[in-house]
Image (cartoon, rainbow, N blue to C red; front, top):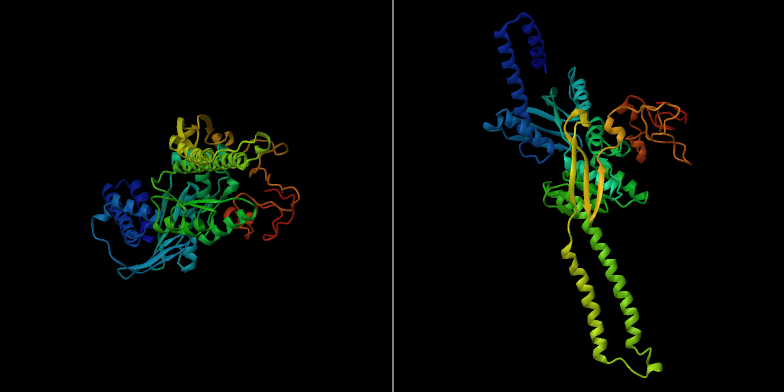
Length: 441
């Protein structure tokens, strides 16, 4: 960290003096410092399947670090929800988040947290690299929201009527940025959670009467995948996630989730149709075969006719089931791209969704999000909910409290507003002492 700091200072001085030779030396030294940090990071993450590890290795490859052999690591330990630590060539290396720094008594050098906040405000996951108990670098990892993520989330919400929540171990700033880009409501963003806390949140939803499906791809998602009513794993995810889930999307396309749900709905509808048909058919046919009309007609149903009618029942149900071979998966069309969202970056804004011959037009983000501006309503007439600008988070009817969107208080955990937002923003919060119902935030 000291080396990098000195280099940055030297660049400013050299540019003022106009010494090209000195600039070259400084830039070369800075490049070597970066490569050294990335080399240790690559050694630590070389065998990991975690997305952060893959991002670090990709950057290391871009720098040419992977062109030389990597040192084997010793005493490797993955700290759930925190990071990893090990020894590389007699050097102790930690890579992780703030929890990792606190749990291992890392000496946090000045500027580390400022750098992490800066990266998180840009929607990046900030990871600190510590060498021999001292933070030496902060890596920013950007998880760009894919078009298919925005498409899938908005079709789930606006076509299928399914509530979408985000459970992530990332910090709240990064999570909210990604959620905003793909259309997940801020109130449904639960960030900075450990694997065990994901299970608690799912249990809370189930206690509220919700049927929960969990979609994940990593080791940390496995407990939640097993806890949910339906666990859905991404094909490119880890093996343990595949084993914990009930459904695996083999093609690793998130839009296949929509196909899986639509197909499940279609099959379930056909099962109900077959059941109703078979029940009705047999309810009418069995009394006739038993001779219900014999007293009036003095004619009994011949046995071969009864046998044929019974076989016809099975054939009709089988034919109905085989008609599922004509099932057509939903299609996505009429995509509209623009730069009104995501800070001017080109991305998808509207999509067309066709299922069973019916066309749905879905806006990826609501109008307020499309402007990407704070609420402009006068405070006295604002009806937006939840509205952070005007503190419009009034308690629900019959309740004496209301949790701020994203706060753990919403799922019966200790309020974390202070550490996330700087002050408590929950109405009627008892854990922070904010007990008044007319609190303005």
